[in-house]
Image 1: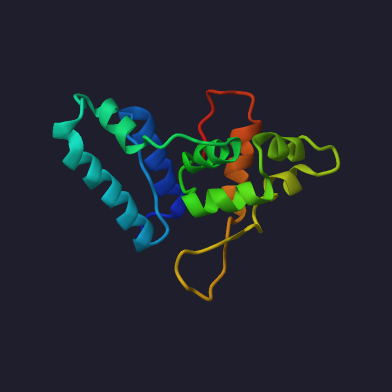
Image 2: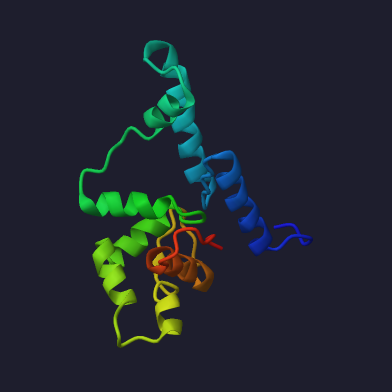
Length: 160
């Protein structure tokens, strides 16, 4: 991250780009994930002449053609749509909270303070596809972002 711009400024800019220009931004955590995503795009582009793909939306549908086979998989895919949530991070959350309901129930539990609810996901460990000794975790800022997404009642608020 550029020293002139902090993580918060960069994330706000990415959200603004998504909202204003309706672009899709996919973040990855490692070169293996990036390569897999590029492979998927390249494969889809190569197949366009042989398929009925005439618009960008058709292209996106082809790239994302795998549909969820279970509620857990749908939940994981939904989490992956949140900026900064990779596939491995979503899977780690789903492992701890196998349904949306299980997470939302914890958020609305009267036994937790707001601070505890916001940091509920922070210490969930994320398995890395690389053989790294460094253990990653969801972290407090992303945990708070997910909390706001699933508890905010004003749908016009910007997610930070």
